Image 1 (cartoon, rainbow, N blue to C red):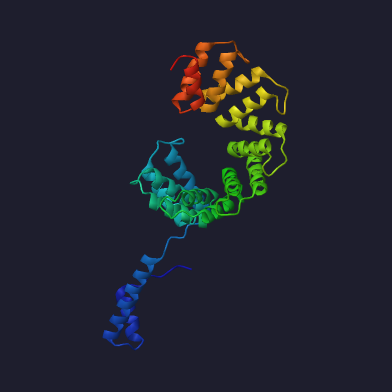
Image 2: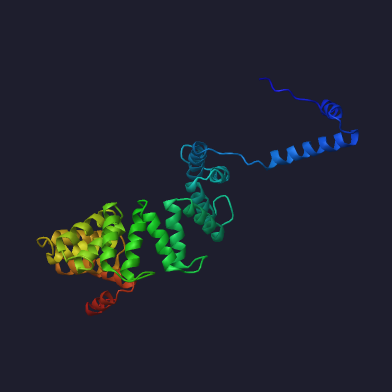
Length: 316
């Protein structure tokens, strides 16, 4: 059906024919016009979830320069539009932009406000980010129970590092009674999801028998998995197990290899252990100069045993 648009004069005429006085007709006409204008201005734009997804995808490209020149201003505007449509990840991204000062003045309080909105809207990344602020007491008052609540919600959605954090809270008794069994359970979940910190912590549980039965073989297996992803502490532990033949036949070369990896990554304990290897020729050719160099690196990081060994060797 074709829509008919009546002029103001035509509307006024119809009102007069309906029995209204001229004054009443004009008052009614003006009331309708202003009422309609106000309603139209106040009506929010309805953004479908599909549209919000598209806006978010475009925002990501501008934010990170993926296939287009990075433009924080455009990214910010698109994220806001997507967030208006209820897009939880767009809310989290707005928090990141305020946190880093991308396209806006850096504002941690505003970042936390957006992380809160994202978390409540169901974003696992927003939940994990909000949990960190409660854990550290930044912007918001430190609250381990609240941090644990949000880490758990993120972990239940498959956020691997959040699962590691839940395990750590149980291990340390932060916001919850200490429970090594529960800690190990969460570390295992994180480890199986590929989080190198979860893998390291699960290995630690197996090595010391915390929450699980002591098992050097399983400890080594998970330390190596974590080390292969770049965890320097796990590299050092892998070296220790190979050096001592725990969970595996003793292997000096493998021990020195992992100590070297950890030392190169800056781990002070691996630097000390690598220095020992060079001093004694364990798994590597004996090289006192190299030993001294690594003792110095470790001592420079405050490692007391390295400092003492340098003194015993007559060097500083």
